[in-house]
Length: 192
Image: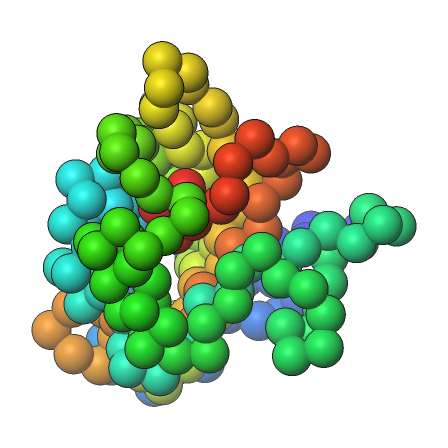
C-alpha cells in the first residue's frame, strides 16, 4: 500500500512526507488557520486590483524576496535569479518600492495611459509547513487584465513564506510561477 503524498488537517494544512507542523505549540505559526491566510492573500490581491500599491507594499517585510523565474528553452524553470534570466526579481522590498515609484510616475514601460484594470482570483490555498514564526503557503491564481479593449489572462502558482509573528502576516519570500506559454505584454507586479 502506498503512502499518500500529503495528509490534511481540519484547517487545510497539507503535511507532505512527514513535513508540517514544526512550530512550537501555542505560537502564532502553530495556530494561524488557512482562512486567516486566505484573508491575507485576498487583501494583498485586492490592493493590487484597486491600484493601492503603497498599501500593497506594506504586505511585505523589508527583506522580502520577490521572484518570478522564467521558462528556459528546454521548458524548465530557471533556478538561480543571480545567474539566469527571470521575468521579475527583487532581492528585497526596496525593489518593489522602486517598481511602484515607476508605475506612479509613468516611468514604466509596462504602464502608461490608460491604466490597466486587473482582477485577481486565488484558489487551492494550502499551508505546507509551519515553523517558529513562519509558515510556507502555496496557491494557484488567475488574473484577468483589461487594457485597450482587450482582456488577457495570466495564470500560475505562487509559493510564499509568511512571517506570522506580528499582528498581521508579512511576506518574506514570494516565488511566482507564470504558466502562460505566450505573454502579450511586459509583465509587471500587478499581473500576478
